[in-house]
Image (cartoon, rainbow, N blue to C red; front, side):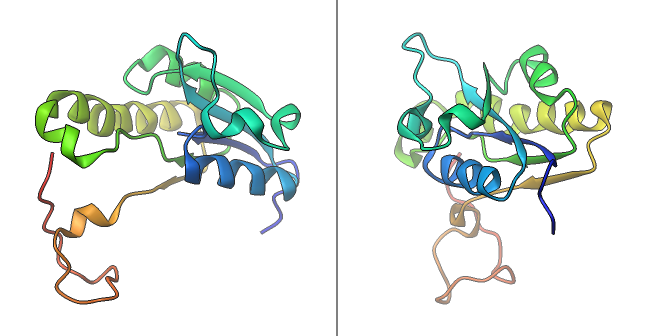
Length: 149
């Protein structure tokens, strides 16, 4: 695929995988907007020291906030949705926050993409949806047996 000029939104762009995806898309010529969870420190997470920092647009907000998602989605053709709460042990202590971010946040991204006329959404997940591995390596045919919120 020719990424030159493609208008891409990466949610969760401040994370480890999201930052590397953002960097690669820029290298391939995409017009990348990085959606990063707002924080009072102004940190862009892993993108703080990125070599493509000056080549990306950054939108800060929260996937649980429909307005910030809609604003970040404007004029984007392709969406890579990586925003999520991680840290499985904490999900047992604060399950509602995981549902808000990982479920309702995903709904906000999907609805905003639909309303903005985005052409494609790529949603990432984690091997945690498979639970304890029944075979290794885990592939997409593995039964889904999530064990944590």
